[in-house]
Length: 227
Image (tube, rainbow, N blue to C red; front, side, top):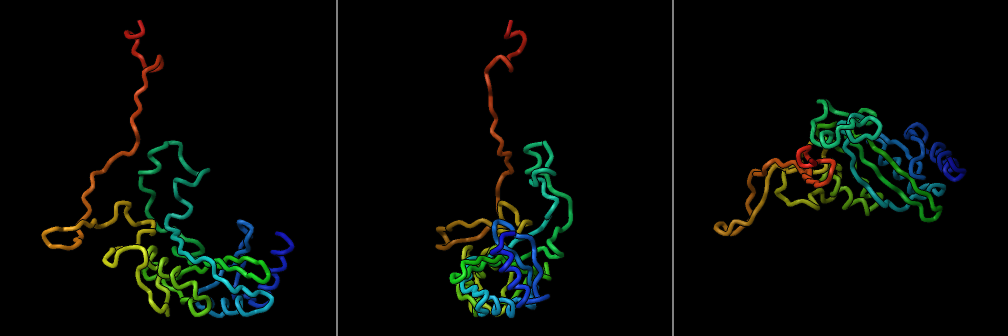
């Protein structure tokens, strides 16, 4: 840990105490873990304390840790069966990060002190994930929280206008959840008879998206052809 990060870590520990826990620095940015019930008080301190002065929220997103730690795409643990690891279903069960399937991640910037900080908020309820909104602290969180609601289904309590922002108003489900099917639940088209867009169940044929390569060289010639 650099001297700058060590100084920032100590300042946060002095002012927030046991309301935050630290994770090792990743991507040259310290990370703190905050429980949802402490989020508002912690964020106000991070913004208003002169030694911290995190006056800008530059990003907010959701993360779904379903199957976390068991995914076939984890490099060292992956099999060598190539295509099969992308289409075979992983074992049943829900993964988690520190006991939570969903996590809200906030990235903050202090312009005056040139510090960056990552805040992770585990969401307690997997069935109805919700955390307090931080729009009253950083107004830039407004659209980011709508995006996380739209794509992950995380509800930000107290948000002034929490509605979908990327998908259609009639969209079913939350497309960035790991259990959301790749082809979706419904498809839409314009119906000239009804004069409007209609939604119908998805009708797609299952295809194997592996190209067939035919080679004509000595490695693949039959013995009689070689003779």
